[in-house]
Image 1: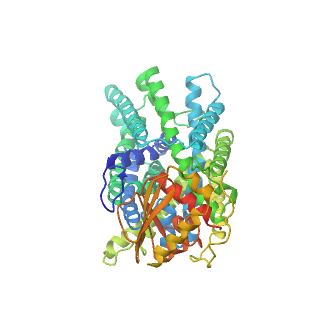
Image 2: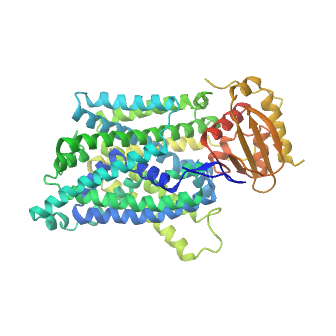
Image 3: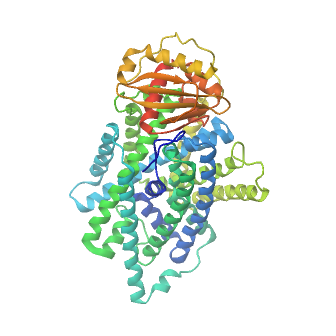
Length: 451
Length: 113
């Protein structure tokens, strides 16, 4: 943090380094290794790297877009605020809420991976470890304990450097064996596979833009710079790990139950010590992600409940910690349910794919919102506007590509998408369109709130 | 006196009338700037959970709240829950989250909707 104090300024703000670490930490979750592995199965070698680089270029443009949106509306409500201002409240809810719901569902995938990681190292059944992870994180959040920027940064850089370094070992080993070129240059994949691979690669960046929710403790300039830097860092990291997966001595072609790619990488690259280190970093990364998701989504659910869009009892705040405990408990229940569905209903891959589709649609929506008031500049070149609109259509196409190429997961994927967008549509009906309320006397008694 | 300052004083009166709520905020110290994007600014000083001054001017602040004047007046006169304009990007906040959450808590409790 950098401290400063002058007229009109805030007492303190988060720095660019803090924001970059937070952005990368939110994007890099344990399930990202599964996403990378799925891309590897589809494409392999330089084609996987090309998919990551293409997604990186798309996200670099998105970073500029989100920087603009955050500069015009510097709100912690972030995505919902931008889309609502661009398209109206109901459209904002219809686009943003499925993304947030599927993010929560992704917690189920994350907890499942954590359970598998812990079960590999300790005599604990994976579902029990998943449950302990969820409830333990929830208890800390319920007490108002938030992971600080420094802890988040430490966990993020340790994970990026650790996995990045481990990825170098299979690359070096492939070069030593003399099959590096064969590993990196497989036959060209079908176009639809490449499109689906890029769609999945965008999923790897999912969440990088959520630092815009922290603009209240930062500034538009810092958030804009951090968005650009974090996309560059993430692109380099995913490209390196992708090459590492391509060069693994034994590259499993099927994502079998209980397989955790980052542990396989650690086992091949560094043995038991590396395995323990990667397991620790995976759990830490998952903890920081879930901690942040619980705190921010509970505030979001609280605000929606205060509006009447969700049950009012979710709008109760504990006066001491100022934590909306009702909303947080509801989120825990959803997360546990999602984990059970992922673990026992074989929904791991459909949940990842559904998140990828929702991210593509939300990012496309953000690009279109940027072309509209209050975000569009009067003197902006028509060419730039057309590029933004074209990219939004490309993102929608990538989302469709993920659905088309989902294979056996397609039906479950469509059910998940229908549930998320259906819930958002129901929420839309309860969202007030009118911005002005009728006059009310201050003397009118207020109801009692709080736990 | 501007309408915004007048609304802020009425909000403070409503807050001070809730003694239990004020007691809950004991120890809270904060300077809040209300910035109407199309009009005036007001600075509110809070010490020990009680509002000690409402100044009709912009100044150094821990928490800066910006919206159009009509939205700010609606909230200060308890006609609108602050969450609504916040969620939909019509009201923005800058400052430490703990101060923002506390103010949000107070405004939500006072607002009868």
